[in-house]
Length: 119
Image 1 (cartoon, rainbow, N blue to C red):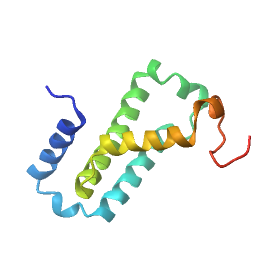
Image 2: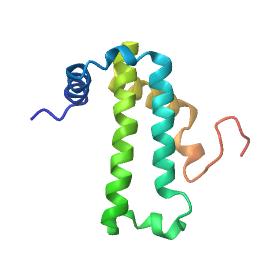
Image 3: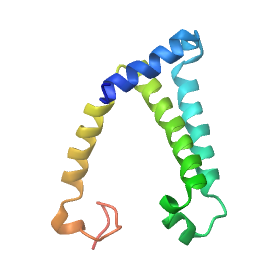
Protein backbone atom coordinates (compact mmCIF):
# COMPACT_ATOMS: atom_id res chain seq x y z
CA UNK A 1 0.00 0.00 0.00
CA UNK A 2 1.32 3.43 -0.99
CA UNK A 3 1.13 5.78 2.00
CA UNK A 4 2.28 8.87 0.08
CA UNK A 5 0.23 12.04 0.20
CA UNK A 6 -0.38 11.81 -3.56
CA UNK A 7 -1.71 8.26 -3.24
CA UNK A 8 -3.98 9.25 -0.36
CA UNK A 9 -5.28 12.22 -2.33
CA UNK A 10 -6.00 9.95 -5.31
CA UNK A 11 -7.92 7.60 -3.02
CA UNK A 12 -9.96 10.49 -1.57
CA UNK A 13 -10.73 11.81 -5.07
CA UNK A 14 -11.71 8.31 -6.27
CA UNK A 15 -14.08 8.00 -3.28
CA UNK A 16 -15.67 11.33 -4.20
CA UNK A 17 -15.88 10.57 -7.91
CA UNK A 18 -17.46 7.15 -7.36
CA UNK A 19 -20.33 8.99 -5.66
CA UNK A 20 -20.52 11.74 -8.31
CA UNK A 21 -19.95 14.47 -5.76
CA UNK A 22 -17.41 16.55 -7.68
CA UNK A 23 -20.08 18.92 -9.02
CA UNK A 24 -20.75 19.96 -5.40
CA UNK A 25 -17.08 20.75 -4.84
CA UNK A 26 -16.74 24.34 -5.95
CA UNK A 27 -13.90 26.22 -4.25
CA UNK A 28 -16.27 28.27 -2.07
CA UNK A 29 -18.07 25.15 -0.88
CA UNK A 30 -14.83 23.33 -0.16
CA UNK A 31 -13.54 26.23 1.94
CA UNK A 32 -16.83 26.44 3.83
CA UNK A 33 -16.85 22.67 4.31
CA UNK A 34 -13.31 22.87 5.67
CA UNK A 35 -14.36 25.58 8.12
CA UNK A 36 -17.38 23.53 9.21
CA UNK A 37 -15.20 20.47 9.80
CA UNK A 38 -12.67 22.57 11.72
CA UNK A 39 -15.58 23.69 13.90
CA UNK A 40 -16.49 20.06 14.55
CA UNK A 41 -12.86 19.42 15.50
CA UNK A 42 -13.01 22.34 17.93
CA UNK A 43 -16.24 20.97 19.37
CA UNK A 44 -14.44 17.77 20.43
CA UNK A 45 -12.25 19.78 22.81
CA UNK A 46 -14.72 22.51 23.76
CA UNK A 47 -15.37 22.76 27.51
CA UNK A 48 -12.76 20.14 28.36
CA UNK A 49 -10.12 20.84 30.95
CA UNK A 50 -6.67 21.49 29.45
CA UNK A 51 -5.22 18.66 31.52
CA UNK A 52 -7.59 16.18 29.86
CA UNK A 53 -6.47 17.33 26.43
CA UNK A 54 -2.82 16.93 27.33
CA UNK A 55 -3.54 13.21 27.87
CA UNK A 56 -5.50 12.51 24.68
CA UNK A 57 -3.49 9.36 23.98
CA UNK A 58 -4.76 7.87 27.25
CA UNK A 59 -8.45 8.32 26.36
CA UNK A 60 -9.40 5.99 23.48
CA UNK A 61 -12.82 7.58 22.86
CA UNK A 62 -11.46 11.14 22.81
CA UNK A 63 -8.58 10.03 20.61
CA UNK A 64 -11.01 8.32 18.18
CA UNK A 65 -13.31 11.36 17.95
CA UNK A 66 -10.39 13.74 17.54
CA UNK A 67 -8.91 11.53 14.82
CA UNK A 68 -12.17 11.33 12.91
CA UNK A 69 -12.60 15.10 12.90
CA UNK A 70 -8.96 15.65 11.96
CA UNK A 71 -9.44 13.25 9.05
CA UNK A 72 -12.51 15.20 7.89
CA UNK A 73 -10.50 18.43 7.92
CA UNK A 74 -7.67 16.73 6.02
CA UNK A 75 -10.03 15.31 3.39
CA UNK A 76 -11.38 18.79 2.68
CA UNK A 77 -7.82 20.10 2.37
CA UNK A 78 -7.07 17.34 -0.13
CA UNK A 79 -10.23 18.15 -2.11
CA UNK A 80 -9.37 21.85 -2.16
CA UNK A 81 -5.76 21.21 -3.16
CA UNK A 82 -6.92 19.02 -6.05
CA UNK A 83 -9.49 21.62 -7.13
CA UNK A 84 -6.86 24.39 -7.08
CA UNK A 85 -4.20 22.30 -8.79
CA UNK A 86 -1.91 22.55 -5.77
CA UNK A 87 0.61 19.96 -4.64
CA UNK A 88 -0.11 20.11 -0.91
CA UNK A 89 3.21 18.51 0.03
CA UNK A 90 5.17 20.99 -2.10
CA UNK A 91 3.22 24.01 -0.86
CA UNK A 92 3.69 22.88 2.74
CA UNK A 93 7.44 22.52 2.22
CA UNK A 94 7.55 26.00 0.64
CA UNK A 95 5.64 27.42 3.61
CA UNK A 96 8.07 25.73 6.03
CA UNK A 97 10.98 27.35 4.17
CA UNK A 98 9.28 30.75 4.36
CA UNK A 99 8.59 30.30 8.09
CA UNK A 100 12.19 29.22 8.68
CA UNK A 101 13.32 32.55 7.24
CA UNK A 102 10.73 34.51 9.26
CA UNK A 103 11.42 32.59 12.48
CA UNK A 104 15.13 31.76 12.71
CA UNK A 105 15.88 29.37 15.56
CA UNK A 106 18.43 31.67 17.21
CA UNK A 107 15.80 34.44 17.61
CA UNK A 108 12.60 32.50 18.23
CA UNK A 109 13.45 29.32 20.11
CA UNK A 110 10.99 29.07 23.00
CA UNK A 111 9.22 32.30 22.01
CA UNK A 112 5.55 32.69 21.08
CA UNK A 113 5.95 36.16 19.60
CA UNK A 114 5.27 36.92 15.96
CA UNK A 115 8.13 37.60 13.54
CA UNK A 116 7.24 41.30 13.36
CA UNK A 117 7.13 41.82 17.16
CA UNK A 118 10.12 43.18 19.02
CA UNK A 119 11.85 40.94 21.52
